[in-house]
Image 1 (cartoon, rainbow, N blue to C red):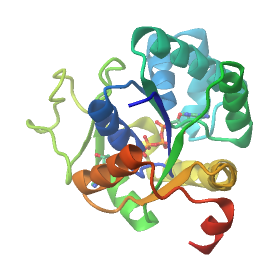
Image 2: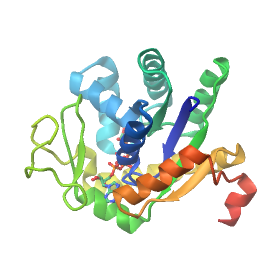
Image 3: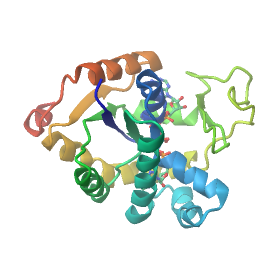
Length: 234
Ligand code: AP5
């Protein structure tokens, strides 16, 4: 299969991180999640971490110029260490970021092949985020759900044995801020990519394996890409 550069789009808690990991395992390509990279920077107390910490704790988007640099560095490292493409999870999140990504890729003769919008209703998202537990180890970062994906031992990460936590930004009031940011800054990317004939919408409310199967089918067959006009009818 040729290189695949895929973006997963969707509101906080839609299942982007979970599906990105499953897709990357299936395609054997890296999962580049800006949320994880930024949380790692915060945990390590780097200058980037110090800059972004207050934004993340408040549920706000970090400045475009900071996250674009972080992402480009991750893409470069991925290309060197594990060619074949990548799945972007949590990036781009603003039109500026999408334009910056386009510019960087264009300069290399590359482009995003597919953007998958995980379309998950708000009620499902609220339930999922209230049940999410995360591994605080920045190198692990495994994500669980008390209902749909519980750890083998309650409260303990299956992979590294650390004590699971509720993410700092998963407090109900911070979730509201993140959702508002999504609808204001990120939702316009749906039309941005639909206009470029790159967007596929998949239902996100099924169980983990159902959603994963639909996404993998879309990726393998490159089917169902909708243009702007068609998108408006959906
Ligand atoms: P980030 O970490 O990207 O958070 P997010 O987009 O809000 O997404 P989440 O991680 O909350 O949810 P998800 O869609 O990955 O869902 P998950 O798979 O975990 O960003 C955090 C912060 O970093 C931002 O607020 C911002 O400050 C900053 N940031 C990051 N990128 C940035 C950028 N580009 N620009 C500016 N700032 C940026 O699933 C949720 C739960 O549901 C889990 O418990 C999971 O197990 C469960 N679940 C998932 N799928 C299913 C299913 N099908 N059935 C049942 N349960 C499921």
